[in-house]
Image (cartoon, rainbow, N blue to C red; front, side, top):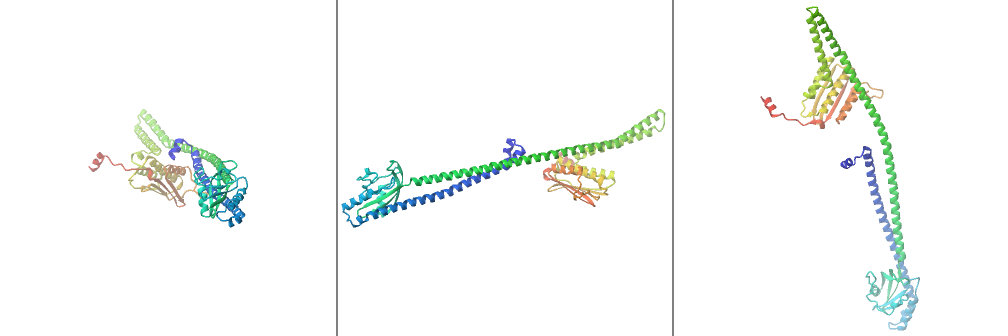
Length: 475
């Protein structure tokens, strides 16, 4: 996913928008599919129930037709012997006259498959239709006779409509006249049922499409809302980021100006005065040499002393700007030299403790911890009024920790109980955050404790000494 987003070269805002919209779209698509499937399944069950009810109503209607027809000529059939041809003709005439609706009629087949009555399709009369099937291969006459032999029942098949000659679905109810070996029945076309079912399915499809459109509209509205919200948040965050960037830039400028002022003061108050003393001593020595004064060498010695002091001051300023011992010997000796110089300069008792690192710190971590220690000692010297300072730096299983404590008056607290963090403390916090570490400041009226932790990601694996160095060490 990250590789795909990086290949698209999307901005941070675009990535956030995708992360907000893609799950929404997927969720809505899943909901739409689920709703559509559930709706279709429910509708199909309802349609199947409706179809069953309509078919059962048609069957009941057919059964009623046959029953009424049988009751109409039962007085003839019930009293006639099996070979009474006159009674048979009378019943066939009665059945041939029983037509209803546009397509309804009664039919009669004997058990051999001969058609005896077919008022709407007279071309079938007096012909044997045994083995007749519809266009789909469904047996018709043989199945009707088989049902009649069993007593009575229903049969469905395709049969040409008398009005059009085209095949249509038909349901037939057939009963038996066993003494005459007749299969008597009637059928009804179920076109209206099929039309009703098709219309119901079309209505279901329309409702599903309408519901999908509603869901799509809600999704689009939600996406527009997410987009507008993202735009508002992006604009707001950009303004906040611009404000923070301006504040950070101003702090950088302030830090630069403060550092320039400090260096300028040290140059003016230290090196400049020493160099002035050197020049004065050299001028005095020159004049005394011109006057052949024996005290000329004293002035030269004094000038040399001033020059040595200037050299030491330049070295101190250079060490403050970038300590060479940090690159040459490592963090522990560099902070120890810083603590010794602090104790000598301020007269504050300074206790330094360290444990030899099994893993070395990378360059960024060493510089950051050294600057934090330097900033902390500067704050102690300027503001804490402390008499005792303790510095501890060590490595452990989680990384490395620098701990600096003093017994001064603590960091000032505002009305809300929060510490007033100046530029130095903010610089410490930013340095640690760049290392993905943590900075804890605990302060009260009896002192302040600053703890900076650096994670293992900034620890280097131990390096073995070369063979030549090991031989020298063993020698």
